[in-house]
Image (cartoon, rainbow, N blue to C red; front, side, top):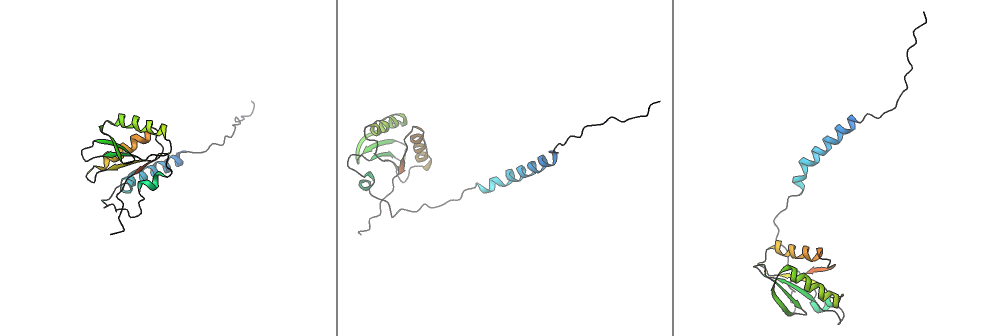
Length: 150
């Protein structure tokens, strides 16, 4: 009888990933539990600006027109160019087309969005977002200019 010879097994080196997965799941749970506490907002009173520049300074050279998108408290949109009202009661799509047309004529014209003090912030953000999605690269916000001469 021949002697019993056990089969020689090849040794394979494998990484045991079960502890790694356990640690990752624990970290994921910790981040999921703590993330709602990090993203909570607080009520703030936004300050008025004292360093805002007049529109004539922002427009820069004389070949650019200052384009102002106006939003009143009821959400109605209007458009002014160089402080001259062009159209009131526009739809958002018409406003975007008109602003793009003005920018195609004078590409260096700054665009600013101004809202009434009673305008909901969501309306202003929505208009800013839509202008940005339409491909208008630089859009600013209008503020009241503090008169230091009084």
